[in-house]
Amino acid sequence: MTATKNGYPNPLIYKVEYAFAEDVETIINVELYLIEIVLKSGKSMIPIYGTPATLNFTENQETSPAGILHKQKLSLYYPGIDLASQPALLELQRKPVIALIYFQNGLIKVMGSMENPALAAPVFDSSSSTGHTIAITCSSDEMAKFLHKT
Image (cartoon, rainbow, N blue to C red):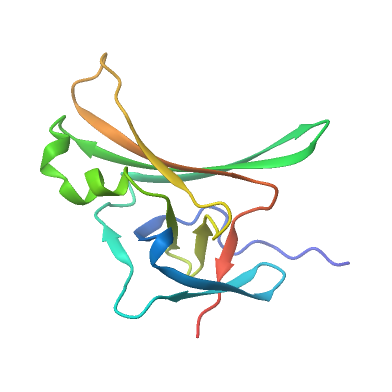
């Protein structure tokens, strides 16, 4: 096996979209880490406003006697503390989702699956009144996969 240089060592996120898990018809495995998402008729992905400075994705691996667990977290920071001004984000917190994370290098990571959707929750730090964060998380026995572009 030959190692190749990573051409995009730190790609920035420029867009995030999600669909409620109940609106996904199926997720098809195309290759080992590539999938396609088919939404139910009349449904579409919902964009979440953010900028590269306000969006952050991490994926950490933990090893336990039960095996390897991949903990994925997408953080969306919003200035101010008026969560009611973001009705789409309030709705996002109520249902399991499949999230798409668009990177500037053209790759799209997928958080969640039909069997194990991602969940969103507000994170508020009372020591900082400058804003709030919505965290979308998913723990899985697999790394987040990439969306196959059709």
